[in-house]
Image (tube, rainbow, N blue to C red):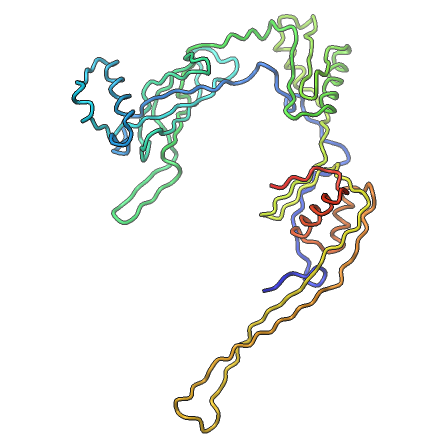
Length: 375
């Protein structure tokens, strides 16, 4: 067993990702915000998948699969006697939940992707076809209809002794498998004001966005509501053309403000620091202990004139070496920049694992002025 000794062992290369620049890179308003009201809506439906090769729901464990199948047959004009319902077995049918996302401004006839997930104990949806399934929103209104062959992107083959499976077999997808039947009433071009919602809450960035819009329009049209919202009044020249106005605003560049943050992943030894990380004056020393345990078994030969039954024996021998090296006490001055922090810590020979422990200790002392997040 051997523990690495700082300063005595060979230099270890470690990965340190630094988001380090003199100024923050500009980003588009489009990438920093969302527009209130312009969003997708989640849809869900319950349906049947047919055409499976004996991998569907079992009648004994999934009773609602039979009930669903009987209801569908009745809608198709097939009457199933009540006495025969319990004897029905559909090994090629599986009950599924169908989910999708209705895009903003979707119109009747538009296509959308849907995901199909098994509800019962079906073993595989491979080769199955989804029957016509209404997709409803949170208001129980049907907005789309889904139907079509399922793609699971995998397979499963097996013999008597073993089998091979690739990917997940009880979840599939139908590209453009749903057709929009009902539109959401959103008269966007008639809006007199727009509310931009920040993707990350920050007063400084919100203020910069508001100032950038006002400077571009050469008037006060944008105001900061809070750290998450910016209200923008549509100018008279864009009346009835709000979409064109939004197009002009989304292309504007703004320098977002970044919080001081240190991200640590102890599993991989990765440390990521933001450019605004600062330290108060602090002294840092990291203990080093070198322990080496070496097993050196020795053969023991029989003595001269020993009986014939005497045999060579292996005698265990253990050597233990313990050494505590001399560490450097490093004083890190106040207000030091990120690059200087890394150089200073490297000067005492820290590895990524050591750096994680040091940063946690500095944070506990109150000298690290940044948010420390451990993944």
